[in-house]
Image 1 (cartoon, rainbow, N blue to C red):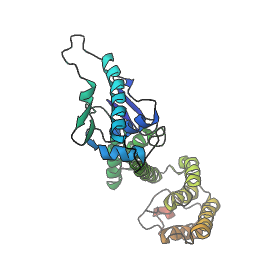
Image 2 (image 1 turned 180 degrees about the vertical axis):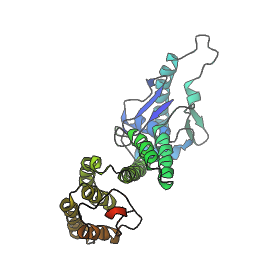
Image 3 (image 1 turned 90 degrees about the vertical axis):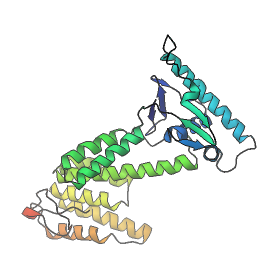
Image 4 (image 1 turned 135 degrees about the vertical axis):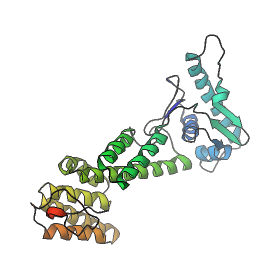
Length: 284
C-alpha cells in the first residue's frame, strides 16, 4: 500500500485508489492511513468524524464506513490477485478489526509523511555536520514530497487538524534549514524570488526575514535589505506591540555599518560580527 497525505488523499493498493468519495469515510481512511500499522481506537475515529458530539449510532455508522473502505480495498486487491490463489490477501487482512479499534496495514509500502520525516532528519544532521551541499539536496527532496497542504481534500477534525499543524511546522523548519544551507553555499541571488514570496506569506516570521535581508545584502541590494527590516518592525509593533528580536536588530546594525561591496557569502555564529572578507553573518 502506498500512502500519500502531503496534499490530496492518495492511498493506493496495486496502483488503485482505495479512497471513498464520501467525506466521512475519506476522513476515517485519512486517520487510519496517517497511523498506518498502528491501532487507531474507535474513540479517536468517532471524535475525529463527529467533533465530540457523536450520534447514538456513531459506532454502527463507523462500521459502515469501514466496510465501504474495505470494498475499495477488495476491488484493488483483485487487480493484483494471484491466479492460483496461493497468496490471496483479503480486505480484512489489510484493514483489520482489533479489540478497541482498527489497523490499516501498509504491507511495507511507502508513506510520504514517513519519508518526509526521514529526509528532514537526514538534512538536519547534515546541517549539524556543516555538509551544506548535502543538507540542501536532501531537504529539497523532503520538500518536493509536498503537493499541497496535508489532507488537502479531506474534511479535518481534531486529530487530523492537529497533525496538519504539526506537519506544516515541520515543513517550515525544513524550508528554513534548506534556505540556510543555500545561503551558506552562496546562492543568495537564486533565493531572492523564493524569499520574496515566503516573507509575504509568513509576514511575522523573523528568521525568513533575516534570511531575505542577508540574501538582498549579499546581492548588493543594501537599501532593500534595510527596507525589509523596517517593514517587519512596523508590522510587529503595530499588530503585536513587539520590537524585532535582538538578533534581527544586530543584523540590521551590521548592514547599516557594513559596505555593500564587502559581502562575500561566508557566515559566522554571531550575526553582528563581520565574516571573513567583511561579509555579514547569518541569524541562527
